[in-house]
Image (cartoon, rainbow, N blue to C red; front, side, top):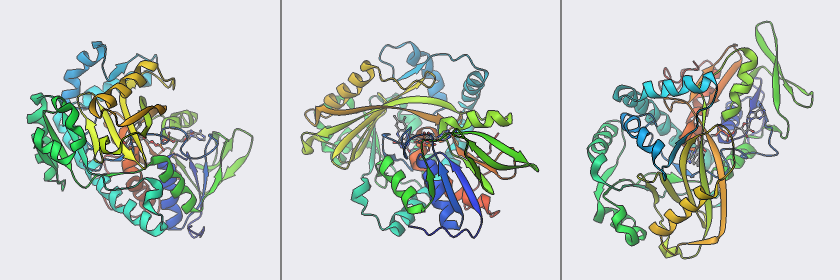
Length: 423
Ligand SMILES: Cc1cc2nc3c(=O)[nH]c(=O)nc-3n(C[C@H](O)[C@H](O)[C@H](O)COP(=O)(O)OP(=O)(O)OC[C@H]3O[C@@H](n4cnc5c(N)ncnc54)[C@H](O)[C@@H]3O)c2cc1C
């Protein structure tokens, strides 16, 4: 555990998901005394609880692409679509949609991909270092180098995928495009549903981890003081600085610096300052299955691109995750979504899982329109944001935390951060 050094002063971090826990660890390590607050009763109880578990360092292409824009009408009106939209009656929702549509162009996709690859590359290095210095037995948190295979069900996207892989190769990604036989050689567990594969993209260096366990590890190892089951409801401001946070039970939390890493909750607080960021909750679901037949379970992380479902063996269970719904912030789990994920699993990997030992879950990805997280100062000189990581929060959290620590110490971050602005 890092000993609180208090060399640099006291920081209060709001939100104990993976992004907040990584922030607490990075700041503690840099010499700050950290207090972290969360309205839940413990760490990783919202979106960082049971996500896909994939450290997708090389699959960072933004959600907003020209292909997505073309497919949206089909997705919206098709019965079994993995994408759903229910209009929300708020200006911010429509501003987010407009910004998303405007981001669906090749120039922006390229720009965001370069920024996200730099951040994910940094994340990989930082996580490696943190895991080694905490001395954790990586099996205890389900961490392993699994490799990742993305399978495509038809050749429609082949040209665009070839272009993306060639583009990413210039930025350091080592990926291979494989035909059906190549995919089966990498992952023999796919043999039962060969018809599902037209081609695939394989990245040997991708990793997997249990997000909730990693969050808890980083938080404990940070030595941060934790306050749970208490919501931050307001700021106290004087002399053009945030002086303290006001908690729901009336506690006043003083510090020199404040970081908002509350995922989808960030805007509730920013509104108190007359500010907001374009963060939209994009709902997804997962099921954590007990494994019935180990030989039928993929050891490589698999993404079924056509159905937008990911499969990852985490520890001794199979995590299956999917869907992207813009439907507000409800967390209910409709049975048809769970049935659909279970059916996809049974079709692709028959006999692999025990349907009677399944833990369904829903989470809300805190997504920016461009898929770039918001990192930096906002509104006051001592108020910082680390939020909006969307579909890649687990992957990007260590790098984002490292960048923020540099910014807070007035140092030049190790990567270009010009586009991660809080506007
Ligand atoms: C189905 C699904 C699959 C996914 N798969 C992957 C994957 O494979 N790989 C990947 O990299 N990412 C994945 N993601 C995305 C990833 O889960 C998120 O990006 C990440 O969990 C966001 O972390 P966070 O810390 O920003 O938010 P959260 O985990 O939601 O944490 C925010 C915390 O802030 C607290 N909070 C908010 N406001 C306040 C307040 N005012 N006072 C006190 N506390 C407050 C909340 O209680 C919460 O605990 C997936 C997401 C989903 C939904």
